[in-house]
Length: 189
Image (tube, rainbow, N blue to C red; front, side, top):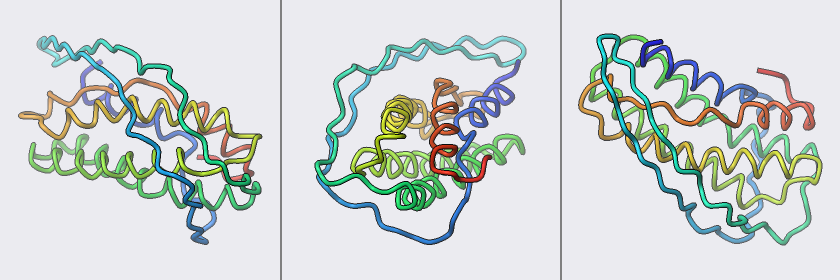
């Protein structure tokens, strides 16, 4: 599998279950900011005639993320917050994917990665600072950990020198995102 195909597969897996739903905007409650996630990653690449790249990963430390102390949102409120937060992330993922498939220039891909990185950080902040209902809390925390890990890969993509430098993020989060959508009665992807 070449790098472009692998990136597309990874992006699809990450974004599964994360599409537009209700359009009402609801600002998530601000409780307290959480510290930036800490993680370490080691990336090693091997280029062959098919431009295959591999990456090794050191997992994010399993320190618990701080949880908001306010009352949990209702399922309806949580659905609006989730969709509002995930929409910019989905747009950024789709643009990055489309430009990668279209063999866009390195400058375009780097700019896409910068926008995707910003969208991922905003989405992670909402996941961390929102008082989610108990029915989805475990899935939200798992998805947040996955996104915190993925951010490392997107940061590397902001400094690529050629399209084949794009590295695959870890494949995680798809099942959690789908369960969140099901439990909040949001349309499936």
